[in-house]
Length: 67
Figure 1 (cartoon, one colour):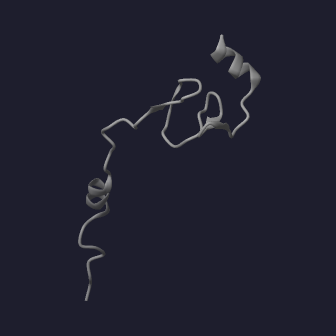
Figure 2 (cartoon, helix red, strand yellow):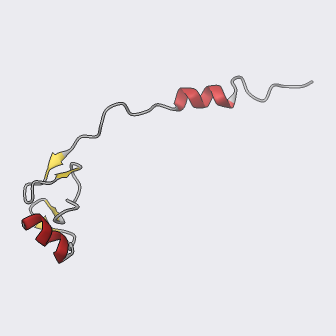
Figure 3 (cartoon, one colour):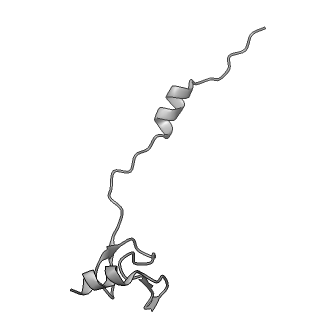
């Protein structure tokens, strides 16, 4: 005897699971360079996190921010 492959179709299931983010992600200001960044992440502009340099950033990028 033939059995159905699934109770609900793939399209119906995927429509239900496709939850889109309506709100924009939260942004925080870097205490060193005051650029916007994601919270709890290294600042992409200056490379600092929690008051210390974690990632070395190119000098050209630093000079542009300071000027």
